[in-house]
Image 1 (cartoon, rainbow, N blue to C red):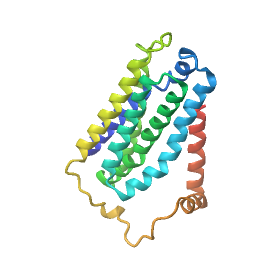
Image 2: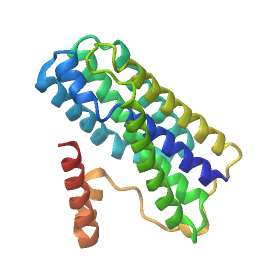
Image 3: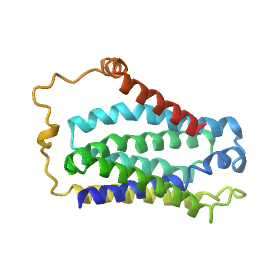
Image 4: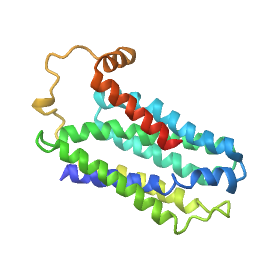
Length: 231
């Protein structure tokens, strides 16, 4: 049941992101008249926020309750995207996008840890697949629905989309919190660290990743896909 709620929460969160993603560039560049540079910087700062958040969130998920980390990250994303309603200058819009990207990405590692904790060893692969599929469907539905009411001819034409995204991430946080009530804090035996060495620093972790061909190519392809997606 917990994994089903987690999949649902992931889908709802991405539904909120889908209401904003297809339209934020045109909104910043044309609707608000801030120009293509400001619009491109908004996407860039979203990505920078994501880049900063990923390793930071991973460490927090290891050291603290991943439910708390995921909930707080989702709420940060909700505040970031919700603040765009009041963004009347390029600077405030860029800050909001950075916070949004930070919170949105910070929830990812924690959610992955929760899948590992809540799903049995035989079900983890399926749960990850369901989660990814639900996120993709959620984003598609959010983009389609937002397309029915977003009006890029008016300065307030994306207010409803920003509010919907904020509500989506807040609701996602609430569902994860609900799923985490009474959840065992112990790590499954097959995931226990045992006699593992001490935690690695960021540079050492990166060195070890790139020392393994499979991990190295996974990292390269993932970064390339992300760059192509945002481009």
